Length: 433
Image (cartoon, rainbow, N blue to C red):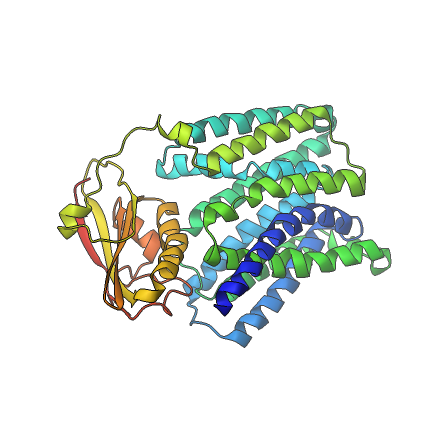
């Protein structure tokens, strides 16, 4: 009961943090780079946040981290933070913070196209329409005089596109990468790697030599502190908390809110000009993101039907209980069914089912090569039996989700406290889809 009451007020607070704090970081970045060179500012911000998170991870303990996991976290940290975020902050020297935020909102479009290009995951009709709207919005945005008036502005635009692409590739790779299980340590390594590279580039390019402590104003100094504490540490912790307590699609709504917050703050606090053409671009791009990230019933009727789920062939029966089915996609050759069983107390069934849906089901369906999921349960006396079957294109796809040691089950944060017992190894079978 206490945990439920805690979640009742903590969840909306965390949503408020990722909505408004992350939306405000665009203007805070602009304030900070007026006094601190952009690469030095971003590098020092992430390095400081990384040190704090690393200390917290050691304080609260965690599972042993392998060298491969550290290397993977560092690589993604460079792609996410050094190239992704660092590039956007650098571009704010030539493009207003609100416009940078609006361009960053097109990131889901890049991810959609990357999934199609790299893994053959074709978008549905809503995704195609969202892509077209996003592209139209980008044309409206960059077609304004402020974007074609100078070489530096065009250079900033190019850096932003590279940053978005880097962030998109890292997002696609994340689902198949073996990362540290300790979330605080994983974030710390990413921030230290990304921040460290930015600091190195700042020194090698001579940018850091232009920094003078005397030039740091009160506004610039407080902006840097705000970015370290709230933009990095607090908001990132809220983001990870929501991934456990909420669902990925709800967390992704930050993509719609952040640009609106950034545009508003830029206009009110920094006198940034928002033209009518910018408003049209914002509507087109954000509507496109909504189409890409949200299942819209009207468009679902136009999608090609999928073949029946082969669960009866695997189990011989469908037990009574809540059933969550994502029909398996048709493939030309046998697919891999990954089968796991676990038991929970009957009184904790609903809470465990919600946790499993928001974590395991969501992570499975987001992994390239996943063809569908079946998750159901049956209560007998004081115990509820849970069966989780996920379908995969091949064993490479299985490894993207479960890691190289794919015979072991992948349990998510908070899951073990519910389980009375579970399979020590996962069963894999070939099925015809």
